Length: 295
Image 1 (spheres, rainbow, N blue to C red):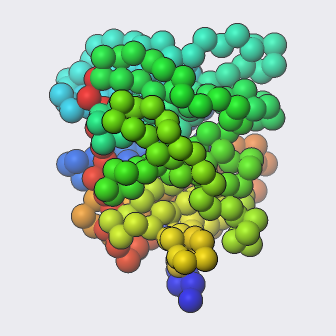
Image 2 (image 1 turned 30 degrees about the vertical axis):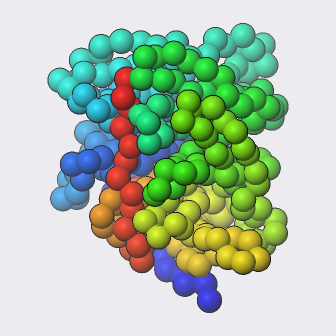
């Protein structure tokens, strides 16, 4: 039986295109205002978030093992030291398709070995011109998987054996197997939203300690939790969100608070008064600690 609930606003509208929520190891909640190029730190006491501008795009934020953070920007990564200063920039993708609207980085995350994975996408969102990249701790960049349109929601299982990854227009979440060297050895469809009869497109996702995968459904104003079953993945929980463009989700490590970002991208002004707010809901299982970048 599907368990239904409704998310509640945790902030006012604080982003235009909110993405990438993360609970770090200190319990701090962060997200990005992707197309504004800003990283937001969200106080848990309800006070206004603080904002740091890092470029034209800020797509992914992750902590580093040595302190500080790594942020994926439009075409590169920026490494921040523990004091917040910019330590280094790492080119990832050259934009050679400006005549078609360009290429930019999108979502990503870190694997158990501390490697940073990030996808690129065509800015017009219509062509399979995107690539999934792996950035090793020595800052070597390797293209791992091509032919993607909008790569989204990369997260590793609690045991670190598989990763879950969506190419949003396909409405499919795939399961990836990566070997010790960081090479992709298997990619198979795992969750087909057509087969599940669920609306929307899979966007950001996260995993819980019980093996469930929580997927934000862009265009459907909801987050759905799915888990393996003998006949294939089944939906066990659905959280309704009062903003249709539900973009990404993060589950509190060791706790049950679900953070959900939303977007007002391409919406008419005032069409959805809460689009761009950050929401929270309660989940039945705790989250998995965020994996930091070892570079």
